[in-house]
Length: 99
Image (cartoon, rainbow, N blue to C red; front, side, top):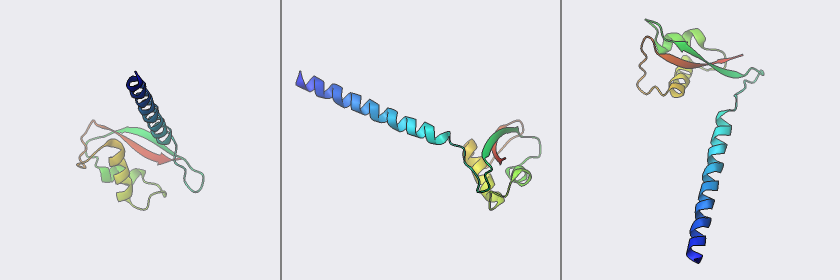
């Protein structure tokens, strides 16, 4: 009987810990980053057109918050889980911008 109570207590503590970690991750992912001048980072979805590349998209959308086109491309790749640097016509990408 005592063993069953211990198992239930451990299970409850495990579930509470997992819920706490999950809520912290969700809360952090919902924060909007802000620039030094008070501008905030937002995201929008764009559709890839024929001839588009990650570099051409970055070149047309980069803002002063980024130190290089490479930094912008890296963020776009991470945001969209692009591991090979390949994009195709018709794909949608989530890209950052500041306002």
